[in-house]
Image (tube, rainbow, N blue to C red; front, top):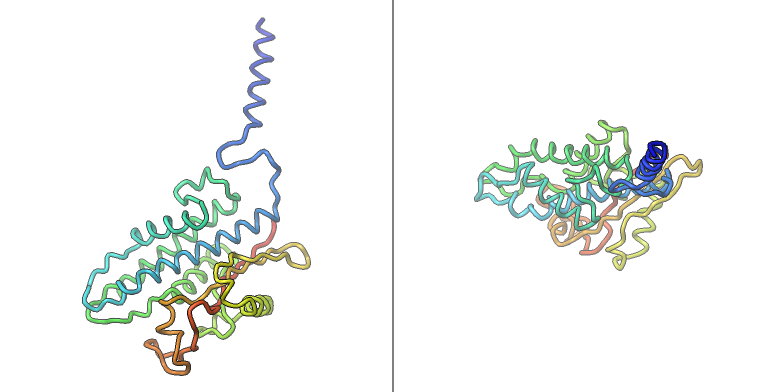
Length: 253
């Protein structure tokens, strides 16, 4: 009887070991698919931070206010809500989320990096009596991506065909992808990230196209060639035109 009980208990233990934990699957992990998904989520998280900054531009640039009540905590709340809406991934429960293990490590680092950039901009954001502060989605994304890359070694950046910031100059692959995005026209505004495997099958490239919306046009819209509030020449863009892309490059483990 004791022997039979031991056998049954052993079989039950083995069965439990084979059951999936929350956020896991019995299916074997696919390193390539996991890397594509990890890169996709990084691109979307950086872009979501850009969207939050875009939404808060009227508040940030309000000369009548001192404290804008837009610190790291407020930013994180908005970031998490928008990211959940876009991806279905809850940043507060990543440990049990159905995402690659690499995402469980990298996404929190990117969140903290984005919060750090917002925290360090508080002195500028909260200056009273001044309108345009220069803390815009593009500068936020460039600063965040550079810091994230230095922390993790993961290639993450914002780029465009003719960037205002020379540090955002595209490489050959990005140039070709930007051309393809532009050729697709404004009808592809809702397009998500596009992935591609390198020729040596060791690296994944993911690019998320970015399109101009109404909040971008005061600086990037018409009349083309006139200087905007930041001192750069306007590109003459229209709502829905391609404004660049977020680019991610990750090695397949």
